[in-house]
Length: 379
Image 1 (cartoon, rainbow, N blue to C red):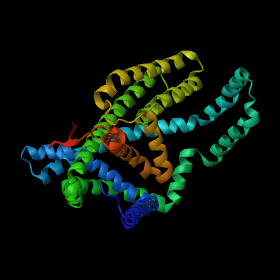
Image 2: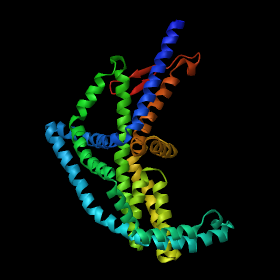
Image 3: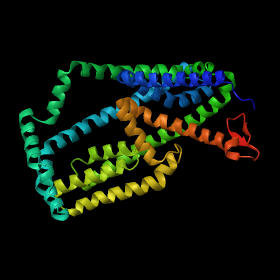
Image 4: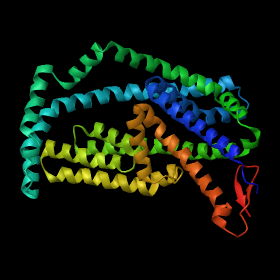
């Protein structure tokens, strides 16, 4: 193998600096345009999730336009039905929560804090003035007429915020329709920009990323939906006034490992103690928690998700938190897709490293063979 000349080394270093500059500039633009890009990312995710169904309808002889119309109509009807069914229910639950806030504040100051102080010998009042916070909540409640009224008034006064919400609500379905219609064309255009010598490996990595991420998101959505319903029904059977709201929140947070079940146990337990003041109902919440965990671990996750994303739970939590910290809502939306693609790339890098002379030493290097199906074999 010939050694590179100093000029070639300098040219290679400058190319790397250029690519690093491009990446930094792209991240900088992503941070600036995060609020603008959010509806585009949501619409792109919807288009990507619906594209396989459109392709199946096309394979049965249906035109692309008709298949897109059917899939988009079904998605719209499902969204509207869920909205119509959930909105009144969620509204009642939120009103119940708002009305119960003074009672929760009083319970924290009169019951929870003394209980913690008695068992830990830590003077909580020394570090946290619970009485002041409780009075602040009560005064704010009485003067503003409730948190819901305050939030609604703030959103109403903030014309730009309200306008942004309306624009995004209209923009997302429109963009989703165009992404769904033109998804294959967009992929072909992107593929045409890849140098031919790199096209096979890029195609392989793209297929692996699509399979990993698509299976995970579709499966995780089913897990979230089923667990949310289970949690809500279980807490309602126990008799919690906020059972539906807590169950729905715990179900939605299931995509972050351990956060959903912990939310159910903590908030459900507090709600049971505040509402009933006994350990029997807290035990009921614990039963719902255990049943949900067993059902998720031994049936839901193996059936719908499995190990498709290949990421450790801590990596998923870090990706979501880091994405939210860096780019807000947009970062949280992109966290799992970026993490899944990064995981595929890391596996490929490990594969190349094991095939390199650096890893094999003086032994014969491992040769990677690209098969037509996109899989790789070694000899």
